[in-house]
Image 1 (cartoon, rainbow, N blue to C red):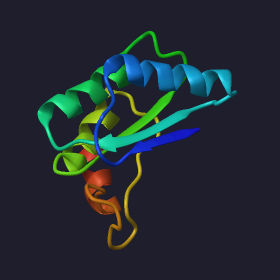
Image 2: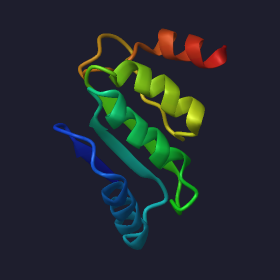
Image 3: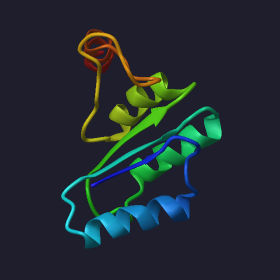
Image 4: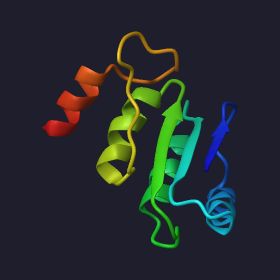
Length: 106
């Protein structure tokens, strides 16, 4: 199951509630994409990905000003699926595949 919020990043409690709902619905992985224009929004996503109370694998990514760095940091923190653009990105913050691959191999 996936959740997208193009305007903000939910509170920590809100993120946990969405993951719990995904689990109840039978999800194997919870994909979440939220607005990351501020360091606080990005920190909430990082905390969510590393939270031991989340009971299923998480694929998390930011959209917005800090979207590109969020994808690298969240991948390093354990985000299980990491999306990249094959050609030109249609999503704010999505990296080209060569750049994401190169950065994650370092």
